[in-house]
View (cartoon, helix red, strand yellow):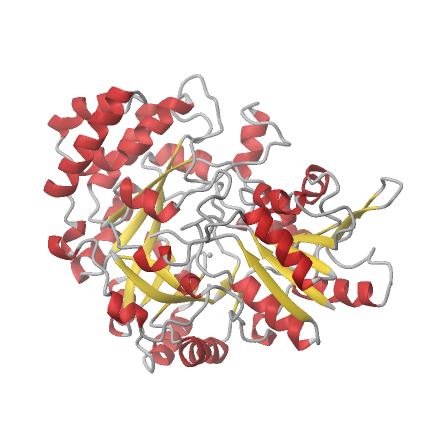
Length: 528
């Protein structure tokens, strides 16, 4: 049968999604014909924006030349192109993979189809944590939802539809009967990543193979090393996935064998001419010591630049030196909040600030660029508490400072708290992390959160005698906007040396000659 994979996404939000590459390979291995519709390159997307450019404009990341990426922008409207794609490809099934904030984009595409459209199945994180809501909110546009890991369930759904069999009972599949009754099933068995085929990214636009990082475009591809995370952060949905599978007697946290990782690297370098890699793991340094050394020994054969994300508590000088020797390009660390008591009580992260400061001296002293992620606007937070986060960031030597407003995604413990406090309706579909907050708290209004968020880097980087002026720039008024732009330029020219890792004349430049050599490759979490 014909399956059209649909990836609702906005510019700069996600790099290539490994799941879509795996689904493409799996489906083709069973004889199905696969198509793809990816909305990433549509500037006109309703509510759309370019996350990477916004981050650079807010001084969260280095400016970069995006002219190569912009060459692939679509001038047409995404819904019209999607309808045309469905008409031309004639799929038997449309398979949408979406996060909660991208789910409305998927519905917008589906709304353009005629009533005799193909059947539609939705998977992904949102479908996993809110399967009934995803079905109900679609108002009939989605026929099936797959909860949990969908590799095997999608293949079984295709088999049953092709054989005209009832899909009810497939592991993880939820659906409504014609009489309005809800059919649901248990989570599917976890997938062994070592048995999955190599990802096929052939259907993605070439521009999706590139990722801006440190002021340059890289031909960067993802490689999954872990599924799950051993930590329990309340703003993340990984703990909920772990608990859901544990409740059904299944283990969720898994590590991929090193020979499989090596095979995937060889595949991406050989077929797609990757010049860099992103190791896709919530906490890359979840490896035990012997496993870590095995990774470094294996990767020493390649030494391609690579990017990881991990927790400050997991790093040591030995580990970073080993990674640096085999090609470590950059690290992303989650700080999230600077008040120890608040961080422990609400974020479920018990770690002293002094330990964070001491650990993050290590990459700085080794000359390894790193960024830190911060969130503000948590339930029960105040503006004063945000300044604890600012003060902590002022003691770090990061060359990238991400500042996001809290987004209460389904599946996170803090979403449950926000609902319990009446800060968000249980049926509400959230927006992107780069959008203003949805929580309307009397002690910390959305306008106040947005004002501090856009000035966050100014507070971190500029002298405290400039803080009264920065506070005026928090105001979301024409005067505040004008002052913010002036201060932003002052900060960029006087105080933003990106941790001393880059010369000022290098900032914002891109080696376009290198980027256009072998320019033929393919396409998610990550921020840097």
